[in-house]
Length: 551
Image (cartoon, rainbow, N blue to C red; front, side, top):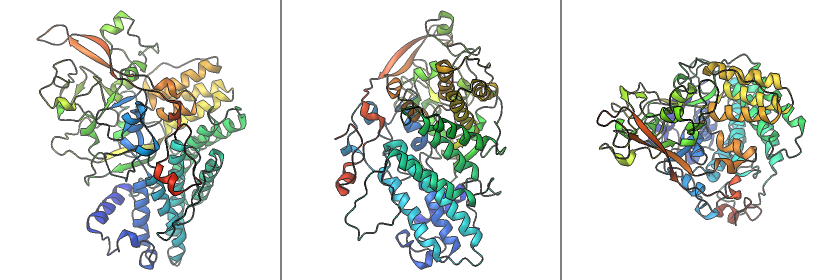
């Protein structure tokens, strides 16, 4: 079968969009013609396009969500994040977003249904491909597309709750639509059915040269995340223990594959994200060396202005404060010793995830202090300065010189083993299995160089698990949805905080005072548990009901 590494696939797709031909392929609106569905190579190109649209990354998969919580501030509002955190979202201002459109939205209703149309087109037409000599390829591609459709519907479920479950191929001749929302439970069941259909045709490990293709582990990891959501308080008000058991079993199924292992140590933690397809990675997308703005310019986009970066997403002060001290105690600005030297003796993950004042980066200490090279008073592109006094370091290859070439291959991890450990720990905690939950929680902390936790169970243990998810999975797109499935979304909706850093020994500028600063007022509305469906969609389909709280 044709190599389907996501790196290769995106290069193929870029060529397709630029010259409208790949292997003499007809324009993309002719994908249903026999000339495409009679060629395994061309069908693979079609599947690659589905990958490119269904597997979201960076701003679409993580940073945009983080900027709507107590993790991040969006410096340039690339995904219209401010619309949500300031209570301005309505069904009338939900623009569409085609993949690779870097200034848009992450509502993605129309985008995801456009991709689902491609999956349904595949299922409608794959029977035209001659099975003689192509049986293995057909089985593999069919399994992958079932997984990708499941992924698309999960993205919709996360945003909107239950959604219309479309399996037919609408054409330009269809002028009327009667597709009501399915319930949350029915949408979950549909996704689980697609995962079950995918599993027999997926391999446990991607063959060499095909890294990035969906595997058994990817499908099981999606199942684990989905069932964890389904068991959570917002969707399991009766606290059905059977749902928690299903969530535990799903996470353990991935763990028991023995296909994956935690990668690195506290000293090498950051390489999880820059060492492509390492032992911890279950499923990832690597954006290759063909220029894809905001996707493989991420090292530049996240770095401070003083290095010619854009500081696109700024880490909030409350996120930095959430990192514990090295001994496992909480950080507090009310502790004089900690307030005087706030970045000393902290959870080692802080130093891999966040660039703070004075930390070494590309050959010099970061200067977020007032008047420093990376501050809002810098002489170097001050409009690109962090508003909070922090930038993201997680996922940034600090050894890469983006001033020589602004774009470079970059990896977005969709699923990794650490999440499976946390999923399992949470489910086991809810089942009363405190010792098991602590074992998997402490595996993560041990790797991070943090002391083991002890707990008597109950709410104390759940608080510890929630804290660990907040730190271990920061900026990876989890916090927004974790807060919602726990029914505590308002707790992550406070004003965005930063830090004002003032030198106390000019001109040496080596000692500083720190003052917490509000950099953005935010508004919480209960409707923000879900995204609004674009008005045009409810107008086109009278059976489609709007998300609660929007009119």
